[in-house]
Length: 203
Image 1 (cartoon, rainbow, N blue to C red):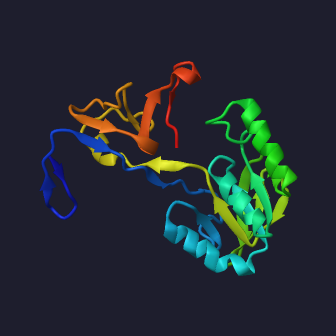
Image 2 (spheres, rainbow, N blue to C red; image 1 turned 60 degrees about the vertical axis):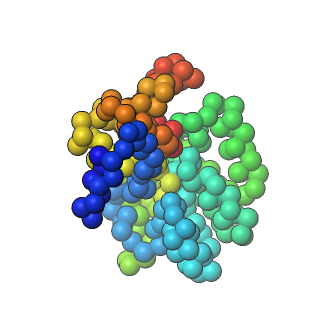
Image 3 (spheres, rainbow, N blue to C red; image 1 turned 30 degrees about the vertical axis):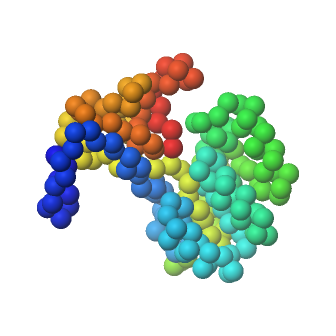
């Protein structure tokens, strides 16, 4: 039985958990400034589009989820810089040759891709004005889009006793450790044969 927030309940024989997650936020100083966005819902996109006419310089933080936003914004004529903490884009989901291909494509379309770069803080009074990197460099920004992954929505499963190391763990048949409960999508972690058996969660 699944108990809902309004007190109603739904009985099931099998349950599939496909709840996804919420965007992971920056924790550095300035993360709460106006002009800092994530992209997860249509409402997120509507807010970005409403501010876009006044935003010429855009910094995208995260080169996994952020690459698509960077490409779209560049096509709209914006000056776009992508900041990625790892040494290549899409490092969590793609092999190195594929990563290098996407890096080259984005650079050839005018996007400034910064690899192995850590964000120190966001600067501004009420609205974001710059992204300061750990090496001291300051990237002017009228808008910041944060694409650093999600926090999986699994708390009810955790409370029910499911194995939740990073997301909810599933076997090769998508079964969780709870009887008759399966999980799929962004919230599901599994042992991946293409990653030498490492447990991963593909967002």
